[in-house]
Image (cartoon, rainbow, N blue to C red; front, side, top):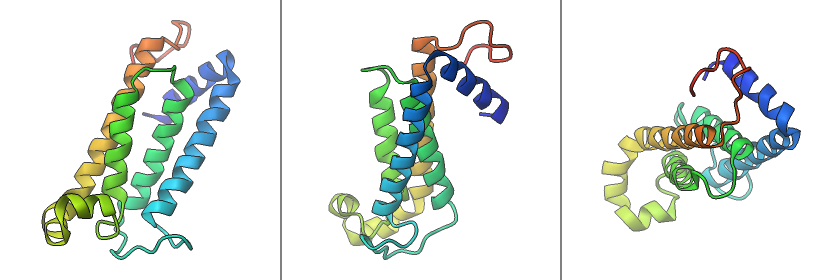
Length: 156
């Protein structure tokens, strides 16, 4: 999504309900703080990461939090939540430390986790982000937040 399109969407949503923008920013901030703490992408007093942080994890975390914020800003109750939920879980499992994550450890065991799952974590995270994008697109189309007077947006 280019910045011009993002600005047009934000302006349209703000004209119709400015509280949506605030809610989206709050959810994005909370999502970033919560996910960062649990995945220990940088040091925090609650969790210690045992596996080294790779270069793709922080940008993925920022993208995840941003997409959660956008989805929350445009979301209506009971629409596209399965896709957003699956995308969030997949993103979490991909970004999280593979050896610290109890869910992954139970599913795979330590040797299989490091041998089979760790190499595909970036792809798993990408799938999660794509699912979030699909949820946003679906929600956007269902709610028809954009009016025809917003030039340059076409069919999102």
